[in-house]
Image (cartoon, rainbow, N blue to C red):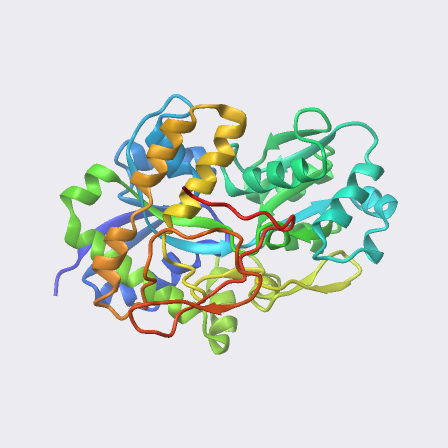
Length: 386
């Protein structure tokens, strides 16, 4: 049987696993796709290849389709977020010297307020904080966190763009004092002795949509069957990754040279929610460190897109354009039409209050078994998309 060739890009991160597993375990082939994966060196390189036709789909930062569809940053191209690939997965780390001044060893690894206040107290002047891209969940979480502490860049913090694989090197060379980066690059920096991990991103927002499966809107419209086949393959991969007995295999596959080129033991830590936070081997538990399937993790909630739009608008302006783009680019309609028949349990609504669930809660759904949450923000705020 002939297969349709499809070129998809990714940046080397653990949360590219759904695409890798879809290819390596044959889910894509079973959907009639020859999934060709391309490792890109940076988010800007991946974006440009998608926009100019070198890729048909991409593993993409969740705020990027909102910004591109709204025309923020000079480029205006309608991009669809077909589904969410991963929730959470970021780690915040600091220089070992700063960690010592913070008393990081005695701090609660999940207490965003305590860690933030200690970090500000330990800083000697404005902190240079590395983030993988200006339009990213990393940047939105950092801004949200810092505002809750009574500050915001650029007064006390300078956020610098550093590609994820370079984060440990940037710390070692003194370019940055802290970072927020997707796994396994936080764990890698800790393993190399370049950082102490002090806070998981999930401690700021318990259920932050980190990466999405993205495609240009015109390509989605012109190729509905191919887009649907890709969504089914990736959704099956997400479901497979979430099974505890598959964690070791996921880590082994992602450690291969084509993907992360890293020891599987390091990659496995966030999958098991047990983080080694420094070169001494100190461990911390990190609830919901990364999630690929449970809690409707793959569903593209419009309310999540609207939270992203409001967060970006706070510092960039263009609120109405961003809100309009958010409603257009996250595609629960395509998700429902494609994955409902494939067996996905679909929530009754496509928007919800974000941050309103401190515990796992059963909600109305097509199969009647859907548990959502926890999805709370560290400061107790609730976001109403309306």
